[in-house]
Amino acid sequence: SSFKLWGGRFSKPTDRLVDELNASISFDRRLAYHDILGSLAHVQMLARQGIIPEIDAVAIVEGLGIILREIQQGEFEFRLEDEDIHLSVERRLRELIGPAAGRLHTARSRNDQVALDLRLWTRDAILVVSKGISEVVQALLDLAGRHRETVMPGYTHLQRAQPVLLAHHLHAYVAMLFRDLERLRDLYGRVNRSPLGSGALAGVTYPVDRQYVADLLAMDGICENSLDAVSDRDFVLEFLAALSLLMTHLSRLAEELILWSTGEFGFVEIDDAYATGSSIMPQKKNPDVAELIRAKTGRVLGHLTGLATVLKGLPLAYNKDLQEDKEGVFDAFDTVALILQVLPPMLRTLRFRTDRMAEAAAGSFSLATDLADHLVRQGMPFREAHELVGRVVAYCEAHKKDFPDLTPAEWSQFHPLLAESRPPLTVWDAIRAREIPGGTGPGQVSRALEQAVARLAEE
Ligand code: ARG
Image 1 (spheres, rainbow, N blue to C red):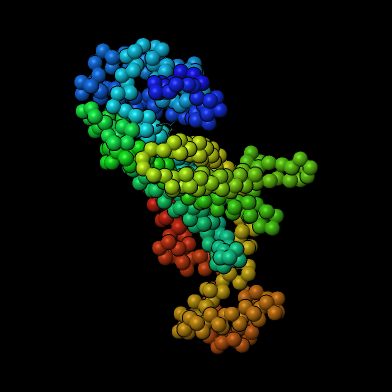
Image 2 (image 1 turned 45 degrees about the vertical axis):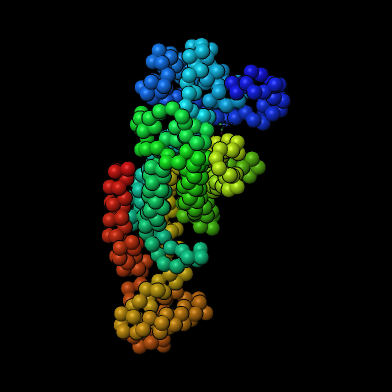
């Protein structure tokens, strides 16, 4: 319905509703900075290769500088009829410097341009997320450091299984988050490649220097195939996958905080600053932050699924479908970035009820495996010991007793070995017995925490 930079072959304006459907400016305006960055590199290359006159290149660089300032100061006018950020910047450039603006798009298509912009954006987003993950790791390590002597029940099937140190439990999340950092680092190398020079799809007819553009943008190299370069969004999908996995980890942690802060568990109290109340029930303190972390995991995973579905049937090369790559990843990033900011102070202010955790750790025959292991050390085959301790447990349950309540006479009913030498059966004995790499023994846990602190310092 208005002047189009691509309007030469058209005899009438587009329908207003088509403009609305077609336009991406409402969301790709977010790429303005990266779009200008890419154009600055491209125009320098064009002049250096003698593809456009130096004097025009200088005017373009100046104009782009002005536009950048206008955007930063919130003075830039994003118009629906500009269609997208690329045409918007070019329209403004023409207003500022006149016909020389028309040389910027030499040897370039919006197809390689938008691919570049999104790569530059994703590169920055990876760094922001990585920094945020490091801060969560730091908070977990601080918390774990304070709880090297806090015992808790370890669970399988959410049934008490064997005692562990709280520090060990927290370190499990540190291990997950280190993998998330590794994934992002690995992905960075695949994102940081320049598609410019691919043109619309087949490569361009000018003697461009693709590597020079990549160097100016501090990219690791160029995309190797022009058709792939303009239509590849693997890097967005991979980023969404990495964010989904990260959120999956944070959601598990959130779920545990929700569970542990119930009256039934009573293991932890969430600080007032990170909890909310009820509009009807005066006594309520709800773990809304943790619940939202759990819920927003679905949202991020939804964006991954959404984009995978957009991409899966696309023929080569560029298709307008690819414009749908942005909103989901922007939203996923914003969601994750906010959570990564909220989580560290929330973790640091958790108050653990160590007495309740210790009590729970000792209950439910959580030392049964240790009792069986004791018999094995006396020479009994493990299967036999397992069976025998199972019978002791059944006896205790029938008589409402725990292991320490059994008399020597009762023990000897089960096996002479148990009459002679009963193992030291405390939670701490069980924990100290597991000084195995990766285990919950206090020495191992301290070492794991030290290694994590050292690794984090290198991040
Ligand atoms: N706004 C478009 C996108 O986000 C830019 C590329 C448009 N290219 C085209 N040939 N229509 O994908």
